[in-house]
Length: 119
Image (tube, rainbow, N blue to C red; front, side):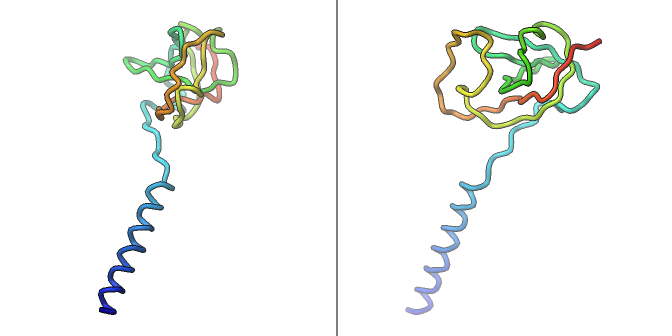
């Protein structure tokens, strides 16, 4: 009986530790491309609700930038940044009347730290 209680208590503690670890470990965002590669050239595009960065056939939503991205629309740019986990209500909007999704679902987006036109 004492052995059974010890085994059950051990299993309960292990289960609690695993569940706690599962919720504390944050999922790392997927790296769609290397935003720190100085050889890459990108296009900044938009729809009515979001800014996107495009490289080849890959487009990724932009979460933030150090400057207004409208000046870079449809132009070739160099940038630096990192991918982050965020939600649709926390990404950049190209107009004052965006119809953003109010979804709290997580998405992966690019956080731009530096951007400039290709010379």
